Image (cartoon, rainbow, N blue to C red):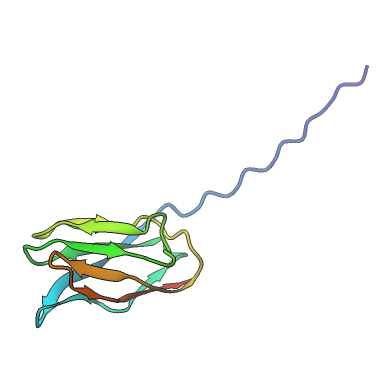
Length: 116
């Protein structure tokens, strides 16, 4: 009886686990919610993540309505310096519009541009 030999599958190379948080400041300008920078450029290869922060004593809601580059599409930014992080980029490269809504229902539409 011949001995069977099982070939082992090669292990995938470990992905770069380093992440870079790219800050996006949520604030108001003349009563309208704004972010800075707009657009925000994120590199998929570098492991960039968006990190939204409120520089005011008001909270904001981030919502990607049609498609999101991240695992989630809704993020709540707490008031007064609190932050929320997007997580790693899961979508393809491209431009992603999202809505920034303040606690009074006013909306603006900034962009995130995902690069390779």
